[in-house]
Length: 318
Image 1 (cartoon, helix red, strand yellow):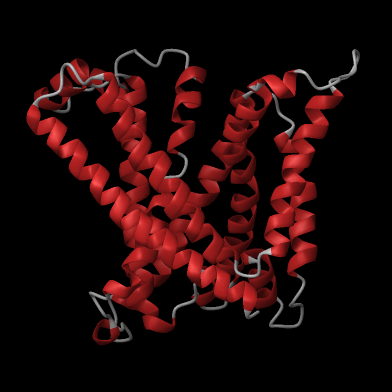
Image 2 (cartoon, rainbow, N blue to C red):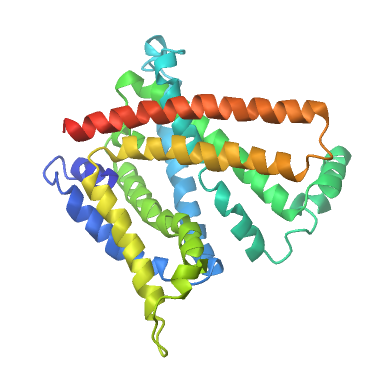
């Protein structure tokens, strides 16, 4: 859907309404990437997508920043607090960190995850060096650094886009950028990023399926691992089918972020941590864990219900 909107905008609304075709084309392009057997091979794809994404963020911040610090900014149109939209905000926020479950796979693919953090060798600050040396290993530093970067970019892009273009800003902020060669290049790179991140997100469910007992009992060929390729192709086709059937993919993504994101990023980690370290937790830590669990259930549940109602309404009333 996002690819269709970008192509429609790029062609001056001459080529529009081909959402299903673009989804099938994207499926053909990403299917070979999903056939890679090891996550380290996806690192090259991830690196290219990361460069493209940083370029996209840079252009967005440059274009919107020029408007924000001019007389055309929509400061007076900004509604700072609207609690009706907070459930959707919670779901989208969790969706931004849906890659958290893959962090253990990233750690297992690192050469020295328990080694000293990269900044430990730099004489920046004694306090920073002591903190990193004593508490942060290489994996912890990379994880925390990535989380901070994602948060900063998300807040900056969302805030600048709303202030620059007002409440009528497109749900894909790239469509609100002024027409130019730079904007066209940025939209193209964004499309490539969407396709490149798909196999990375699919790695975890693929790994779980292929490690299960029922999958191992399926018949297979000797010379060619036909079961492997057919299984991964079926997962790609299943994802594309859902994208074609569901009319409002944005609402489905928000529901997925609210429901699955709350379980994977809030509820499950807190329960596992509390169960594992129950003998060493202080009363304050236990109370904070329960508070975080309560917040996750309350806001995540509200967001999931609101998103499901909106999604159901879109399906029944297309």
